[in-house]
Length: 181
Image 1 (cartoon, rainbow, N blue to C red):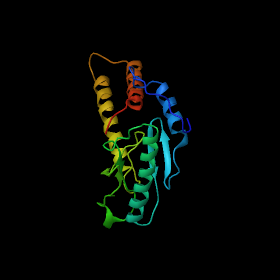
Image 2: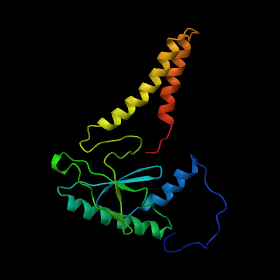
Image 3: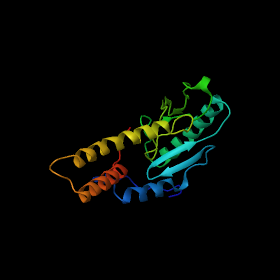
Image 4: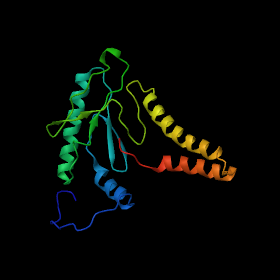
């Protein structure tokens, strides 16, 4: 706390996935994040830095500077950000720059560029039309609907109640299943 640090202790346990303690500890650690040019969006243990600019070079410079500030903060609190899990993305309407990738760095390592990043299960595209997200969602729903159609058309019978419960459970599981992309 402040300039004081506790002595080292071996940690024998970890927190289980989905533990309610993990977000609380993360909130304590991230309470005093450094000031950055970009706006920070924080959810559970994910931080998104977003910045607007007219030129790619301006964005690259600002984001790399912000990443350096965040890296310094993490080192100060003995946190290890993962450059392999950190990505950069661009949202714009300039068709001539559609394939342009940002050169943003974290601890000397260039961040991977994602054209269709997923953040909080939403997949925006460069024009923010959400076509990619809607296509993925439609694919998931098609698989579930195909199953319901087979149940409804079966000779062994599926009651309306069974179909309703299957539909609701399919919707609920799609909302509560975390997928990596």
